[in-house]
Image (tube, rainbow, N blue to C red; front, side):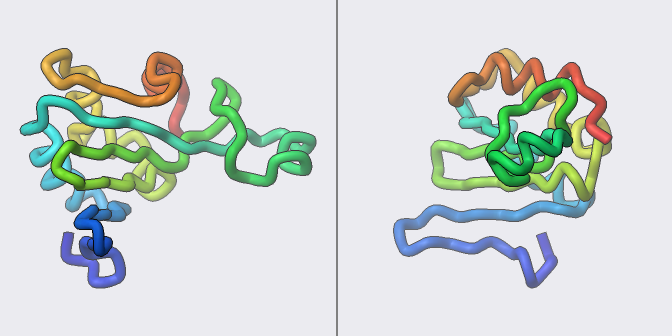
Length: 128
């Protein structure tokens, strides 16, 4: 993760954030995530419906099959948070980057709010 603009940012509490928008940076993150017994997963997206946009803005709208996944967050127990920019990398993030393998790995416990819906959303939509 060599991009100086987004290199690891660490809070005073010791949480390290990594914003990842380049495919070549995904594999190092996936390697780290794959060594964890459990991870937290969350995602953000946009729904392209003008009424929803007026009501809720472009962020914070429920994901659906008519929406677009924009950001995937994965946190590890050792205080690492990976922010994957899905808009920048598209489906390559999951296939070539190896994140799909992590999300499908039954040996890694995944926790999150409405996680079954989030994982179903990720697996069932056209990301682009």
